[in-house]
Every structure is written in structure tokens, then in C-alpha cells.
Amino acid sequence: MTSEQKKRVCYFYDANVGNYHYGPGHPMRPHRIRMTHGLVMNYKLYKKLEVFRAKPANNWEMTQFHTDEYIDFLSRVTPENMEGYEKEQAKFNVGDDSPVFEGLFEYCGLSAGGSMEGAARLNRGLCDIAINWAGGLHHAKKSEASGFCYVNDIVLGILELLRYYARVLYIDIDVHHGDGVEEAFYTTDRVMTVSFHKYGEFFPGTGDIKDVGVGKGKYYSVNFPLRDGIDDESYKSVFEPVIDKVIEWYRPSAIVLQCGGDSLSGDKLGCFNLSMKGHANCVKYVKKFNLPTLVLGGGGYTMRNVARAWAYETGAIVGEEIGPEMPYNDYYEYFGPDYVLDVHPSNMENMNTPEYLEKIKTQVFENLSRTLFAPSVQMQGATRPRHVRR
Image (cartoon, rainbow, N blue to C red; front, side, top):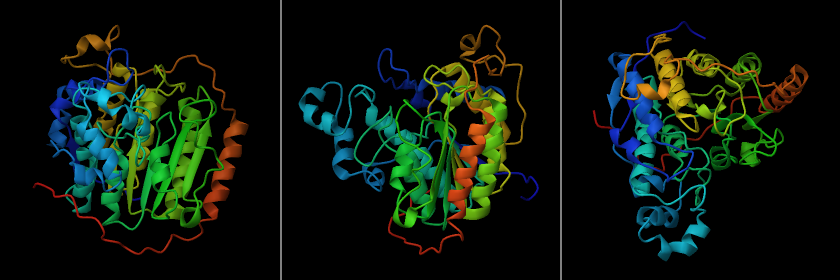
């Protein structure tokens, strides 16, 4: 690792993102992106960022990964006409968890556009780190929605990076397994996916230590299954050595980091016990490798905590320690009763014993050692690059 150098950071945000609603009672709230942005602005972090509004991804760009038929359906279906699309909804898994809502396709375009343009800017050396908190929707599959995700902005961003970079490392710290991204790259050695997640009677049910990839991709999928209640210290004890080893063995040319906020303590759908600083430690650690990095959002269902963590992590990326006092902002009332920038762990029991973590870590290292040398690469320029507005 070289010494910390000043990073040029691109930050993508579209003010419309908070206007989309999955529907009453749905846990996914795009409004959390707006709350995060409010903190980023009020902490004056924008002075150290280049703030962009990305061009929304269009149908053609989305079909770099997804099927034409699926994207065509997403672009047409609305709450008004959805009765006429019952067969397609069943086929593409759009319904209960991933409902049809007003502006669904535009919302997908904003999320994917930020990740693709972030990747394109990294490709052209216009920044060192790109941030898109509206991205990170890791469950979406080639032709189906899953777990609140419709278009897989991460896969689209990685495909863009692969046009310039020989090997891309994907790291996922969401409480849920990054199944859509793993599946997309399961048979290739050009992307290594590394996911730390709750495993065992938990959505999406994938991500066993034994799932390592197939064919050319064998041992390039790395899964670290965890149990309830993992705390900062335990998480750090596995995250750092695993990422160290992965970088040493795989020698990636670029990194994509998915920062799902549902691994934070007190999340409505999560079961981990990470503090804001424990979660941010992963971001700081990855940043130290000084590789072109795309930083994305993901899950996170206790809005005030997700906004706190992502704002704090934006600070960490630009080298600014923000908080604990919170500046007045448009969403100040959400941060009561303490109005500070922090997420504390609870007294939840940590079911991850040191023996269990050691056992999994040993197995992961053993699998990694089977990749032996960094793979040889043939660059394919099959896709048209995303145009970057200067």
C-alpha cells in the first residue's frame, strides 16, 4: 500500500431520486438518498467533491446486461396499465417485494446512470473514486427483479470498467448476499466477487462458503457467511485479512464497493450489530489500496442510520472526519432524539464465535490459494462506451 494521496472524487446525485415511492409500508425508501445528500451538503463536503447529475441510463445501455424483453417490460409497465401485464409480472418477478410504482423505469435509469457514468469517469482517469449512493442494487438478475432491485447498476458499472481494466474486484458489505452480481460473473475470472453476509434462513438464501464459481470462474466467487449479531471487532477481524489476501492474490485493476447500510445495528431488516464507524472502517480500508474505486449504496431500511453512515463515509472518502455534532438540515427531525452523527451498536448477542470466523477464514484462504496466479486476460471491446460529458 502506498501512502494516502489526495483523491479526486466524483459524486453522483439526482434530486429527483427521493420522489420515488415503492408504495405504502414498503421498507425500501429512496428518500434516504435525499437525506444523505442533505448531510453531505450541510457538512460542506461538496467543496471536496465534483458533484454530477448523471444522464439516466437508457434501454440500450441497460441491455448490456439485461434481456431486451425484460427492459422493454420495465419501460412500459405502470400502476395504471399493470393489469394488462399480469403474465409478464409473474415471469419477471415484479410484484410483491419489487412492486410496480409510478416512475419505476426512470428510477432505474437514475440508479444505473450514476454507476455507469461513475465507471466511465474512472475509465478515463477523470477521478480516482466515484460515489453513487443511489446504486448498489445487487439482487437484480438478467431477466428478473428481486429483493427491491430491478436493474443491476453494479453489473452495468462493472461491464463498463471491464472495457478498460483487466480485472475488477467487487466487494459487498450489505447484510444480504450479493447474488445478482455473483451470478452475472460466476463463470469468469475477470471479476472476483467477495460478499460478507448473513447466511442461513435469510434472503436470498444463497452465498454458501461452497459457492466458489464454475469453469473459468472457479474460485473467483468468494463468500463469507456470517451469523446474527456480528460486531465491529469481529467484522474487522475477517474483513481486513480477507481483502488483503484477495488483493494480493487477485491483483485487481479496479474495485467496486457496495456499502449496503442494512448491516448497521438496528436496521429494520438486518440482523448485524455494526456501528457507523465499524461499517465505515471497510470503506477506509478499501480506499488505502489506491485503486480506481466505484462506491455504491445498497440496502438499508432504517433511513436515519443509512443517511448517517453514507454521509460519514462520503467524508471518509474525501479525507474529512465529520460529526458527531449534526448541522441543521432539511431532515433534522429524523435524527432525533440525540441529533448526532453516530450509529451505536446494541447489546445484541454476537453469534459469530472466534472459532467459527477462523474456520470460515481458513476455508476462504484455501479457496483463494487455488486461483494461484492472477489470470491472463484478453480484452474484449464488445460494448460501446458510455459517453462522458466533460
